[in-house]
Every structure is written in C-alpha cells, then in structure tokens.
Image 1: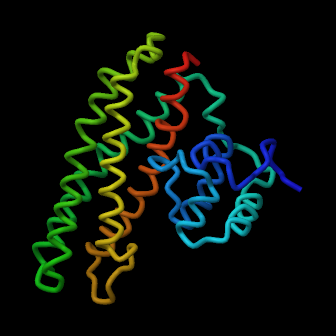
Image 2 (image 1 turned 60 degrees about the vertical axis):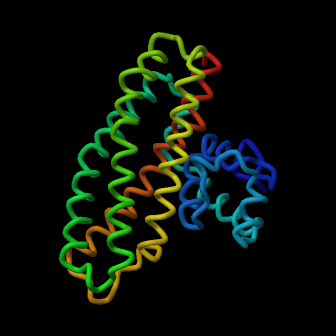
Length: 228
C-alpha cells in the first residue's frame, strides 16, 4: 500500500514528485535522475531511458517516504520564505564554494596536468564556465526576479522566469560534463589530497545545484507565475 497521499505511478512527473515528496530526491540522486531541469518528464519514461526498473525505483521511493519528522514541504510554505531559503542556503553557499572549486581545479590542472592532459584542462574550463554562468545568474535573481515575486508581481514575470530556466539548463549541461570528466567522481588511485577534495566538492556542488534548481523550476517559479 502506498505511504503517500498521491499514489506513485509511472506517469507522475519527476519534478512534481520531488515537489510533493522532497525525500524522493534521495532516490533520484542515487540513480542520477534529473529532477530539476528534466523535471517535466514522467517517471516511467525516465526509468526506461536510463535502463532502470521503474517498479523497483517506486518501491525505493516508498521506503524513503515512510513517516518521519522535520521534512519541509516548500510547496506549502510562503513563497517569500522559500526565496529566503534559496538565497541563504544555496546562493550564499555558491558564493563561497565556486571560488574554492576554481582554485582547486586550477591547482590540480597545473600540478597534475601531465597525468591527464586532456580531461583535467577540460574540467578546469567546465568549472570556469559553470562559475561564469551561475554568478551573474544569482545576481539577476536577487536584484530582478526575486524582488518582483516579493512585491506580488510574479504573475508578470514570465520573461525573467524564462531566462532563468534557460540558464538552469545550461548549468545542468555543464554539471553533466563535469560528471563525465570526473568519471562519475571516482577519484584516481594516485590522486593527491587537493584532487580528492576537488572531486568531493564537485559532487557536493552537483547535489546542491540539483536541489536548488528543483526548488526554483518546480516550486517557486510555477507558484509565482500562478500568483500563489
């Protein structure tokens, strides 16, 4: 018997499922299911494309959704509270983490470039591109879009929202490149401590960005546009 108020089916969209049941994102992360930029796809279609058993995935989600405390339903909180959470939890973290990851990526490429002369320079460029994408993106959100929503003008924010979602897709593509270049974050046997820390930091960045983009694409933006 389903433990959720909304029954899990093959047809439910992964973004909707992540919004209704935040703990489902743990399962998505394990199986590399994109619930942020790719949140509009049905669960069954995603599983089929990735060679996953959809019934097994749904059972795994059910286990994660067993009753527990302290799970915030951001789709039920005020949008202003959600904006504060995004800025304080994700934007502030990125402002600190992106320069740190850039510094480590430069060091690893400079010191160990001869060990992997193709991938390490490409990885550095991907990190720089992601940083260059996200930093002005956050500024636009904090100076233009989020104030519009706070003023109750979200229903007229179609243009800014469309721009932000396109930029989310670009960031998502860069995350996929980084995962590929790091061999799914598997650390080479002879990696130094900085190299290991870089891989760990990039994996954490991916996880945080998936949650971050999900909260905006699948919860904040739809609610703002609908005047909720």
